[in-house]
Structure formats: structure tokens, C-alpha cells
Length: 404
Image 1 (cartoon, helix red, strand yellow):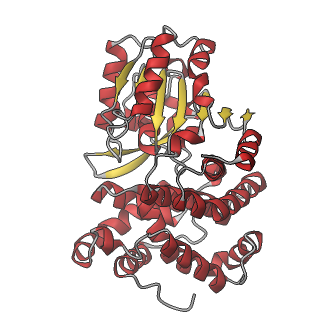
Image 2 (cartoon, rainbow, N blue to C red):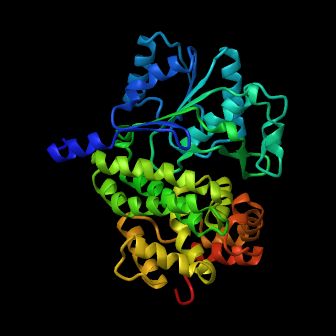
Image 3 (cartoon, helix red, strand yellow):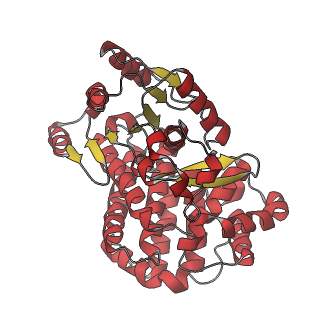
């Protein structure tokens, strides 16, 4: 139960933002869902979530509230932790069969990415992969053939609720592909920190460090985007302060509030670009069906060490903004490794089943996929396949190597 100070602080953590889209932020904002549907003239939405959430009590309460408001809803929850094209196509079929007029998507990054992709595809003449984020493919989209989306995050990690893209697995190539269109940005986001309170500690850690990586890679990227840099730095500061609190007490709604906005900040900032952490996490997630945030959390120090020649100055500035005792690159790395340890993040990939034997067989494939991944272009150093293979191998065996 929140004390008097906490209640006052929570009242201050209420806001409506219009950047990067319309956001209703604060504890209890989920109560505005029905009114939001009515304002957008969505009367018969498809409600997209994932298999792990659909039976949760709060989901049933949300559906009942919509029903009481005379908003007729059908539920689609066949979404994998790493959503696939099959999931998207099945959702589109349900949308068309039910003659729906919008999408409400609630969940973590998997559900959000799937829901946005479903909304994109409800009336397009091209196939999903024709809209992969390569060149001007997005111009093939018929914007009038897209459904309106209301996005409701239940994790503080991907920030997909404020993103213009979805990451979807191509089962034919066992690879993750980014589907992009500017209008994939949800029309309205309802960001209610109370919906994240039930997230277990291990997922709080993994998703929280996913948000940290988003802000970190965005800031360290080479593109010129001072606005994104400013957002990323504040996102990093919020996560440094509040992720340990949320991890140790999931019911602390002040911590949950700060983490939820830091997650959205990461996704806003990485419009500037991402980097090699994601370039490796994407193929590993597609090949081994592992949690994306956890992969980022494990891979982070191994990539940072290899990026050191290009990012040392930026890392020392981040360390000063975070008010670390030691603001050098080694000092930042020491703090980061301690943070991961405190959050019970495994030190290496072998701890989650990507062992040395697997790496021996898959190393070249992973490295090839990493070089091809769209995120690789934003990395401060353009690693070769051999370099990606070395980073992957080091992350498997837990060897940072060299002088950090």
C-alpha cells in the first residue's frame, strides 16, 4: 500500500503527452480505454494480446469494461514470444472475418509488435515482407488500408507502443525482420504503470535492461540527432535509479511509473538508430526463440568492449550523467556488470542454453545474420562477420577479453 508521500508522487506522475504520439500516462489511465475507443470511432475492435496474458484477471476486467460501454470486442491471443508472420496472418484473418474497425493491443513487445503488424496488413495488396524496412519499401503501403491502433504496454522494455515498426520472425529464413511504416505509430497510447506491477522480477530485469540498451545504443550511435540524445540520457538516468527499485518491489508504482516512461523514451530515442547489441540479439532470438530483452542484457558488455575505441568519450559522459563514482570507461563497465549481477542477469549465453557446442555450429550463421541486420548500420564500428563471430563466441563463454 502506498504511503502518503507515494500517493502525492503518483498524483504528480499523471500526464497527457502528444509526443511522439498521444499518450495517456499514469496509474488508473486504463479506465479511459472505452472513452478513447469512442473518441476514435472504434466500435468493434480486435483485441490483440499474447497467450500468457489472455487469462489474467486484469485482462478480463478490461474486456468487461469495454462490453459495459457497448464496445463489441473479439480477442486474438495466438502470439508467440517472438511473433511470427503466421501469427500476423492469422490475426489479419480474424480481423477481416469479424469486420473489425480498429485494433486494441495490450501486452509486452511481442503483442505490441504483432498487433501493429496486424493493423498494417488488414487491407494491403502486397505481402508482409514487401514492407521490410529496406530502402523505400514502406512507400508500397496503402495508408488507407491500415487500421487504427490503441496500444497498452504491460512491460517497461521495448517501448513498441511508441514505435513505427514491428520486429517479426520470418519462419522460412529463421530470421527477424523489421516491418516499417510511419503510420504504424499507434494513434493513442494508454500507459498505466499499474498494469506492469504484476510483472515477475526476472522479467522486470530483462525488460528494464532492454530499455537501457535502447537508450544506450541510441546515444552511442553516430547519426546526428541531439533531440534523441537528450531523451536517451534521461532515459538511462531513470533506469539507473528506478530499475533496482522495481526489481526488488514490483508493487512500487512510483518505480513502475518511471520505468514505463523510460521504456517509451528508449523507443523514441532509437529512431536515431540502434547497434550491434540488437544486430546479434535479433538472429539469436529468431534461431533459438530466446527472450529479446534478456539477450540484450547478456550481450551488452561484450559489444561495449568491442565498441570502446569509438564510444569511450560518450560512455564517460553517460557515467557523469549517471553520477557514478568512477566515470571512466572501466568504471562504467564495473558498474554495469554489478547492476546485471544485482538483477540476476546471467553472465553468458551458455546459461540460457546457447552453449559452446551450439556456437561452434551456428557461429558463422549468426555472424552473417548480424551483419545483414538493419540495426548493424547504426553501430559506431561496422563489424565484419569475423568480428561478430568473435563477440558471439565471447558472450557464449563469458569472456570480456582485453582491458576494459
